[in-house]
Length: 320
Length: 320
Image (cartoon, rainbow over all chains, first blue to last red; front, side, top):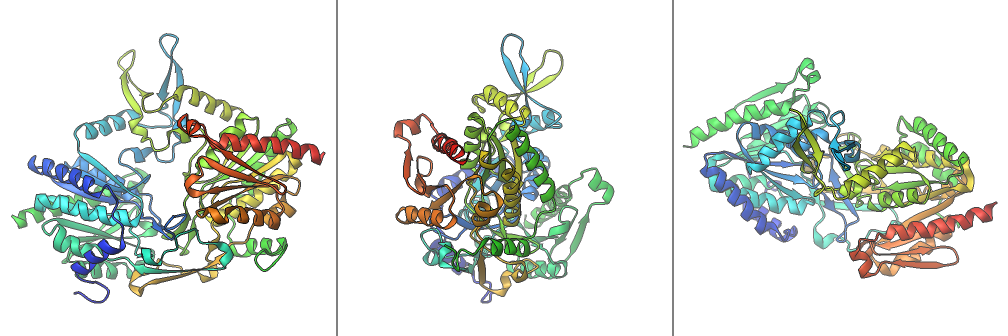
């Protein structure tokens, strides 16, 4: 399937090394991820890499301006919780300050609005959580602390596209150590375009120079080396978000045909909270919430993760 | 000073009306800001509009991608606190999710890491703040609650450039009702470039179409009508951030000459936390923290606000 638009793995790897600066801590993080995967793999646990949030693409070397992608990280943070409920250990590769598992339930709450000053037993004054502002905080906090204490969630942060790409490669190689027990759930909204360092101005672009022309190159698709070289035994899921429903399934099928991975979760911007299609080589399954379920705040991520859990079980059996 | 690059007020106003969609709540917010300004003005209080955070510039009508400006909102949120300490009432026009006065001290803290489960007096379990994670939380919370109870801080949010521009105009007109007691402290990192609606694609740009060419127009400078028409009696401060120190003061002087406002706070990206220059028509004053002050976490915003407080006092005396 290789064509001008879908270069081979060595070309993608070459561009990654040459055109995207690796963050200085990538090897340290890779070590942590490898240890995490091996520890949980040995304990018979499956491990999923959940990527989440949008990537930042600098327009200047000393960056003031950047291109970004709309993404709160809700899909990734919510899915991570459901993976944990089903017994997975989770590497959560997420955009700095995007939504976080469990904490996401209180996104948008100003910390100081959620606390009350209360007279303590003696002369002391205690600061306590306001349950009106943080509904269900006791049980949520308890679950969060259990997950943390169990070492089941490994958070890794990125901001820029370069950081994301290098950390994704490191994560893929780390999780490849546990073969088919590894799943990749690539929900991050990764930029398709970037400016190579050689074409980037050093300083802030001056508005006095007149209108701005930006010329951006296409980002190499990491899905190819990920599936082919970095983690060839793993179960790999990508996402396809479009605003135009009429081209969605075609794009999803194209991606599957090109990268030969296992499923694409296809969704449309306006309806993504209540409707997705799980597209596989041989099949496509619609997952939809009813209006009643939406009212009861059922989350579509629960359905997506249940669907993939079953598919992953089947996949592991086949591989053995 | 009008030239091709600095169009007259009517032209700026015309472009604002035609090329930037007004948010639906702008009149409601304008009413709230007017009431706020008049209430505090009548009580003899000065009112400052602090703008803070970066603006989002959509690249598509159904937006997936956007251009953004680096800005955490630290400068604005910190300055707002010092204005409150000096007796100002503050309209805080800030980017959604950027740093917020008082709460900014705990930015980066995960809410669930800052809470502890504690056995209550009876069978109940209480959720309390962890002072290790939230240092000084008692006094900070107390001050936050006083400010809120006193109605001294009016928060107004924006995300896109269009929202910011229309809300800035509304704020300027609202604060003009109290004449020279109003200060504008324009610390937001506003985009210089945008794509007019007529040139914007409806749907998500397809990466399969090849490299991306973006052509952006210059944003009309609101400082001109703000100073000339919207709030002609107010004390107006703008900011100039550059990455290249060698052009900084020249740019600051150019802005003052063009817009005829009262001061430019000039700062360089790398050193902005410890050094700024307050540039006025007749003078320029350097404000710098010593290394010892940096270690003691003295904030340069305290110095900036003190400097402007004195200048505002002088300005008000001259106007009377």
